[in-house]
Image 1 (tube, rainbow, N blue to C red):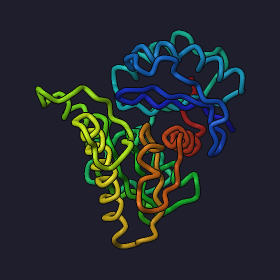
Image 2: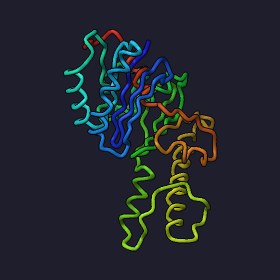
Image 3: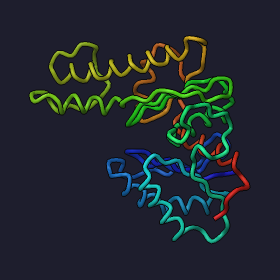
Image 4: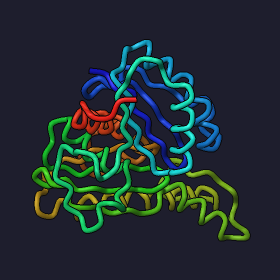
Length: 259
């Protein structure tokens, strides 16, 4: 069973055709620097084409940007395929493949709900889900229960705040430094931002492993491949974690609303 999954984030829209735990057709955004509204408009026609090409049973959307979700729904209802398809927008009210045990479930972002679902889809019932993007999110799945997590600023955003705060600081991009110690201000800033980011991520993961030191860690997000190799322990890189989780939630709700 194949689902077209969309992940609408704060800075990027991702889409892909998901079958079980594999993204078999990734739909790329040609201009990742464009705003998410422009990305959504650009990606819509390829999404419709992929649904037809792969005979998908439906579409599932994870969104943390309400007005871009509204744009997608407007496009969908105006130009959706003629055949009946299942459709689902992921919220805390959807049927989930785990127990959601948090104080205010309505405040949990759809991306986090999907990331936890991806762990279940991959066969984990106890895991840490780490997504390194505009924000860094750390979520804990403990014995089949999603018990909460942590949210902090992403590494690139923190680095940008440093650049903008210093009148005499150079406008240098966040990047993996060539050495630990920078021999000029620009390289010192890169080294400081990068290694502080690695240290912060490692610290949170260690704390979430206090009760179980071997707890698996699944890593995703735009900086996962940059920061992941520097972490002092093994992690499992899952590049399309949110899409895989969205499809798993869609499976859990299969048989519901059709469009």
